[in-house]
Amino acid sequence: MSAVLPLVVYALLRSRVGSDVEALAIGGAIPAAWVLVSLAWRRRVDWIALTSVVLLVLAVLLSLVSGGSSLPLKLREAVVTGVLGLACVGSVVAGKPLPLFVVRLRARRDARARRSAEQVLDDPVRQHAVTVLTMLVGITLLAAAAVRVILAVVLPTVVFLGLASIVEWVIIAAGALPTLWYAHRQRVLLRSRGSDAVPGKAGDPAGADRAS
Image 1 (cartoon, rainbow, N blue to C red):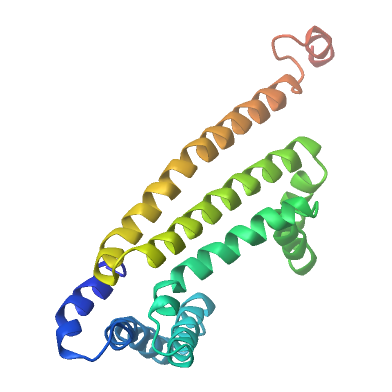
Image 2: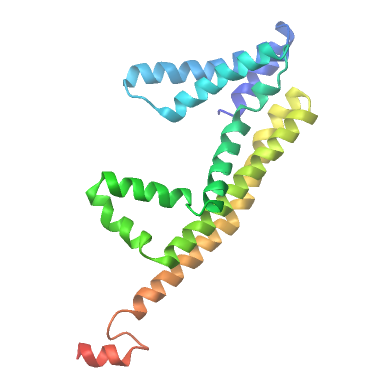
C-alpha cells in the first residue's frame, strides 16, 4: 500500500498542481498524517514511523531550497535503506557487527537476556556467522539504495514511482536467498555440533561409556 499510494496520488494530482514536488509532497503527506494520528491515538512513540515523517519534512525543505527539484522526495526511502546498509557494513569493517552490539546492549540492561547473549558472545563460531550475515544484509541494502538512486536520476517521476519499489524488492529478495541459505547452513552446523557434544551420541564412545 505504501508503494502504490504515492503513485496513485501523483497520477491524480500532477495535472492539477504546479510541479512534481507538490504532487510528491501531497502523496507523502497522506501516510505521514496517518502516522501522526496513530501516534496521538496510541499515545506511544513509534520511532520508525516518526522518522519517516521527519524525512518527509526534510525532503520537502531540501526540494524548496534546491529550486524545486523532486530528487530529495524521490530519495527518502533510499536514505533509510542506504543508512542501514552502511551501518551493517561499517560495523563489520570496524570489527563490531551491529547485531552483536545490540545483543551486548540488551545483556547489560536485561538480566534475563544475559544468558542467551553469552551463548552468542562466548562462541566464536556464532560470532563469525553473525558477522557474515550482517555483511550480506548490508551489501543487499546498499545495492537496493544505489539502484533506487540511479532510477530516481534517470527516470521520469511517474515511471520511477511505478518501478522503484518493485526493483528494490527484487534486489532485496535476491540478496535474501544467499542470506537465508547461509543462516540455514549455520543452524545445521550448530545443531550437529551440539548433538556431538551430548554423551552417548553416535561417534562418542567415550561419552557412551561415561553415561553407562
